Every structure is written in C-alpha cells, then in structure tokens.
Amino acid sequence: MAEQALTGYKKWMEGVGEQGVFFSRFFRNIFTGGFEWSEFVRQCYEIGYKSFMLVGLTSFIMGLVLILQLRPSMVDMGAESMLPKTLAVSFIREMGPVITAIICAGKIASSIGAELGSMKVTEQIDAMEVSGANPMQYLVVTRILATSIMVPILALMGDVIGLFGGFLALNFTDDLSFSLYFHKCISSLEFIDFLPALVKTIFFGFAIGFVGCYKGFHSNKGTESVGLAANSAVVTASLWIFVIDAFAVQVTSILFYR
Image (tube, rainbow, N blue to C red):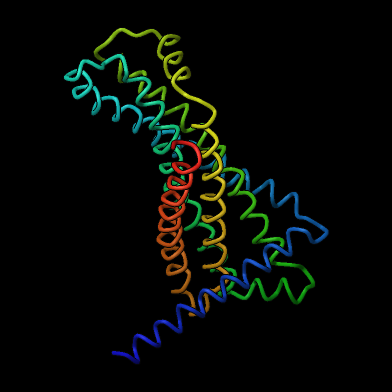
C-alpha cells in the first residue's frame, strides 16, 4: 500500500511539473513575434458564437426556474417585490458565471482536448514542428486566449438572458412591466457585484482553455487516448471551475463585504 501511495504521489508530482512547464511555454509564446491573429479570430468564433445558443438557452431556463422556485417562499414571507432583486444579485454574482463556465467546460474543453489529442496521435503536431511552425503558438496560445476572452462575454450575455427568463416567469402569475422589472434588477446591483464575477470568468475561461490544451497535447496512448483526453479535460476543467469559484467568493467576501 505504501509503495502504491508513493507511486501515485510521484505521478501526481510529475503531472504538476509538466503542467508548470506547459504554462511557462504558453506564457513565453504570448510575447513571441508572429502572433496567429487569423487562428485567434477563428477560435473566438468557434468558442464564442457557436456556444452562444447553448449558453443562452441554459441561462434562460435557469432564470425562469429560479423565479418559479423562489416565488412561493417569497410570497409566504411577504417579500414578493424582492424577487427581481434576489434573482439579479444571485444570477450576476454566482449563477450566471458558474453555469456559463460549466457549459463551456463540457463543450469547449472536450472539443479542444479531442482536437489536439487527435493531432498529437496522428503526429500532426510533430509535423508542424518539423516544418518550422510553432504549434505552441498556433494551437495553444490562440485557444487559451480565446477562451479567456469569450467566456466572460458569454457570461455577460447569459446574465441578460437569464434575467429575461426571470421576467417571463414572473409574468406567468403577476403583471409586471418590462421597464419596471429591469429597473428593479439594475437598481439592486452595484459595480462591486459585476467586478468579481467578471474577473473570475476570465480565470474560468483560462482554466478551460489551459486544461483542454494540456490534455490534448499529452495524449500518447494511441487513438483511445483522444476520448480519454476529452473526458479528462471536462472533469478537470469543471473541478478547477469550482475551486476557482470557492477561492474567488472567499476573497471577495474578505475584500468587499466585511
């Protein structure tokens, strides 16, 4: 048992070291000349535009369901008028960013892991290096930067769509005008509600892109490793999202809400 534990610990430390080296290579290549703008724009399109419908639909349903779930309890407490404020604060601070990140982890991290994994297995990455191209800059830097930019944008759009879903749910039983509803939502929010949520979505996006690229680049067990890379990328990225979120909430509470 002790030997197995030591072996597992050794593999874990090797993995940490490999991720550190991978991160340093990524960071160095950001400032290397010849940035691949066309590939970066393409990745922004693939990651952002093609994920919008899924993120928007999920956010809309969550906003609608939250109002339907909250309303009976708020009515019992005589706080029905607080529904727009409650939804806005909870969705902007927590629900919107985390839902968007989890959706993107499932869609984007898996696709990046599978794509780069298949390129690694079929030796396309090695061929790029032999031909003088820089696969780290072309494949990794563009994808990680694209996820770091597009996930926050998707989260902001998802917030708006989620609040709209809450408006429709509220009007199933109440007659509340569109302008009054969003006035209540906006007036209940402060800049400090947006800033931590925006910052942590940048880290969410970075984690999704980094994990997907790392898992894909380290696929080396034949074709079956492509599926393993995609699956591992989703699980690891999702775990990192919850870890980052827990850390961000704690830091935000210490800095702004005490």
